[in-house]
Length: 196
Image 1 (cartoon, helix red, strand yellow):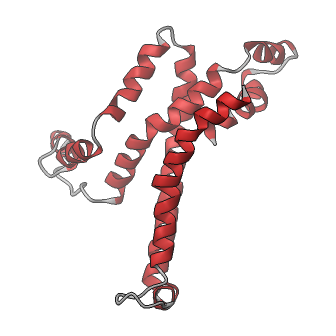
Image 2: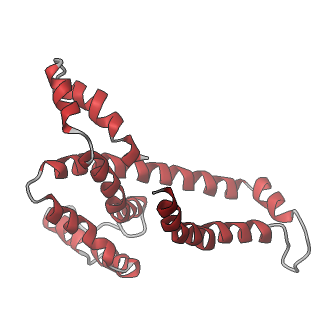
Image 3: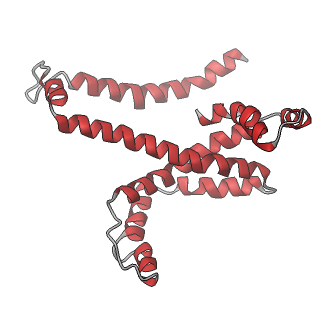
């Protein structure tokens, strides 16, 4: 069994090396050279000496944190609810379906939705609010990023919840735990592998 696992891991390791580790190493390598190809630390001096670059870095980390938290807050209840449904495979397929669409097409779709003449502004006009500049705002960025990431967080959480032994939940209830305590002490800790 261990040999088979190693064999199946080869393509993943190769993909990781080629498309993740190698590009990062190339970027780090290039960062030690100036525009003329001479070895220099001027790039690091510019980065660390400029407040703009540091603010951009902090903004990136902040947005990544926000997107992760919002996605988790939506994904966990969705995955939990999916495990209770009758036709869960069909619903899971419908959630995964948008990942089959090219990211560029999704971007153009959201430009149409959030644009001045888009459906969101049409709805705001009907409600009497009037058109607003929604496109290229923090709200639209967070909305689109969360939408894109949702299926990728729902899937592992759903799998972790599906693989959970139901007898553990029954045992918790038999020992007098209410629904909240069962969730907090049994379900959530056992599903953390799907959250990570």
